[in-house]
Image 1 (cartoon, rainbow over the protein chains, first blue to last red):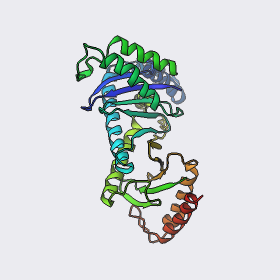
Image 2 (image 1 turned 60 degrees about the vertical axis):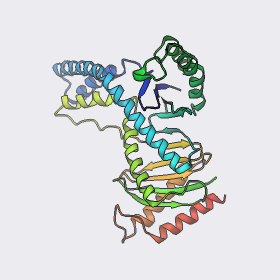
Image 3 (image 1 turned 135 degrees about the horizontal axis):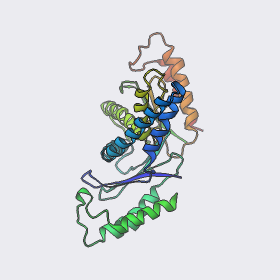
Image 4 (image 1 turned 45 degrees about the horizontal axis):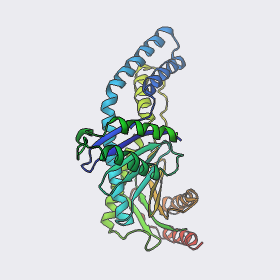
Length: 180
Length: 161
């Protein structure tokens, strides 16, 4: 079982917390490995290989620069997806129905919503079984303990204020790594 | 073991077939709502294919490498895969996308097993009784008697099992 990423959205649809467990070198390593292999199959000359490696490195740099922006875009896309699917499920299954998860060939998205419209989303590999109880545990043992009960944390977590405290981050990281 | 409903969405996101097999499984919604649902799902399906956490970085790298090897053949990208199974507390939805972009949505109860085989059979019937019907116009709503009858008897068999 592999956990790819985790997101929390508040009741104002804002992404107040996101974390990715993908290795940070994922983008650069894949670009530098795919660059040279492509060239060797097509031309195979030394200069072209060097140029492609340089291009790959440049792509890696721009990718790391753009990653922050694309992560924010991803969060928006995920919220839009989850919101539409939740409404679809409630329309078909009745108001007491709840959207639990969806799966594609490459990943699985798990969803948990609390009574106060706090939404938690977790992306894992497609073979993972239901993570509903895991998300529930995160809510009870981490969110309520370290964010809600924190006297310094604001009521509304605008821009993620009060969520990124040490105890919550550490607890979440340990909990998720314990699952993998 | 119950199959609740079948929806077929054409490649443009239009609803072309919708039929309920079991009363009480899903809420009754109007035809207009079904049309909206089909369109919404079509869009969401496209987004879910793009959200792949592993491929977003690899795809960007591939794009730059294909432009650098202008003379060579660009590698064929892996076909994107959108939403395949959706689970909720009251039902489970299986989505099958054909190579031409037609989507079959099969709504079953959450414990239903072997939906892949049922889906396969439904697709077989679609090819036999809809696509081979000389009066059927592509992308248009499916109004084929044979398809209705065969599908009805097949699903009834499953639901009574």
